[in-house]
Image (cartoon, rainbow, N blue to C red; front, side, top):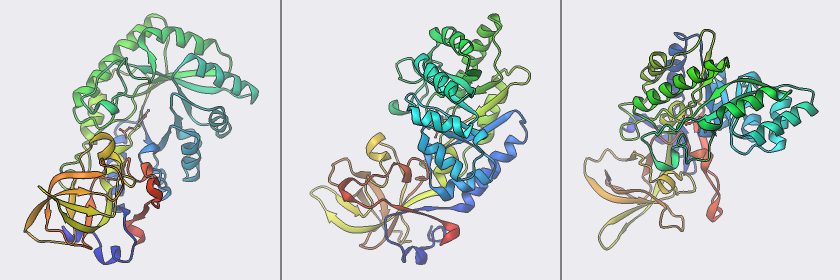
Amino acid sequence: MKGKFPLEKFSRLRTPFYYYDADLLRQTLRTVNSLLARHPNFVMHYAVKANANPKILRMISMAGLGADCVSGGEIQAAVDAGFPARSIVFAGVGKSDWEIDLALEKDIFCFNVESIPELEVINELAEAKGKQARVCLRINPDVGAHTHAKITTGLAENKFGIALSDMEKVIDEAIRLSHIDFIGLHFHIGSQILDMADFESLCNRINDIQRRLSLNHIRVENINVGGGLGVSYTHPDKEPIPDFAAYFNTYAHHLHLLPGQMLHFELGRAIVAQSGSLISRVLYVKQGTHKQFCILDAGMTDLIRPALYQAYHKIENISSDDSIMATYDVVGPVCESSDVFGKATDLSTCHRGDFVAIRSAGAYGEIMASQYNCRPLPKGYLSDEL
Ligand SMILES: *Cc1c(COP(=O)(O)O)cnc(C)c1O
């Protein structure tokens, strides 16, 4: 365990901070690229919202991936990190005018549009600039994913996307508007999905939709199936790289693309989660009435997933090889009862000053940090730069 983390270098840094294993990220990107090479019609856009650390973004842009953005700030961050504007897709239910203007000025690849009012505003703003806006329509496929309720997005009850029953009406409108180029359909069913059957259900639904559209002589050049591939939070060392082969094969086998169609993906978590750990130090070990608390200097402000989604992250005392274990509730210092990283967690006996790693924190970690309690934002370091 000890060998994985450069503790002597850590001792010079103020905790808590994010530590990114650059070699693992590079290996992950190589795996994705070698699989993409077998499918010339597959295009990967990294979902910037998972981690927008400029150094991480640059590594991903250098690997040749495109970017999936959900705000004007993300578009700017992606462009600054070297992603070509023509590799950027822009999603989101509520795009502001300035964000649409920015996307038009940069000439991004396409807008993923979620409603008729949005379509009309983009048409108007594009007309004012004398431009054409390329648009994919985000369709809510009404496909459930076996994941956490707060991270499913593809059910009819969610706020996302255009209902299947409205699809033809919205497509007609997109075709009618003179400054909109309707180029495809977009889907996204949720996040942290490990059961390939969920992606298979999406494929089957898209096949139905394509049949339905072909009856109306509508053909699109692009299908975007979003992201959502999960990672192993329980075994980050056994499964450091997600099963991208199974993921791509599911689409290759079950999705019936028409000749010339491009298939776009928007993975976030699967690309960056396992390369990141939140590193903190033990402040105190406190004996409670019925349990022991291991109190860290990292809190929910640094990594909110456990508090927000009851998400599990593997926790390790990386200062100790002690085979003597103890059971702790591992908590942070923030004034909220939900500031808990793990209940009844077995760790090598903890002492004040020990380094504790919270694993698989490279996605939806650093980027979701807040300054609640006037806490400073955690810094992020790449293994390369220490
Ligand atoms: C969040 C999001 C993604 C990325 O999801 P992951 O689970 O991190 O792969 C992709 N597309 C859209 C539209 C999203 O909202």
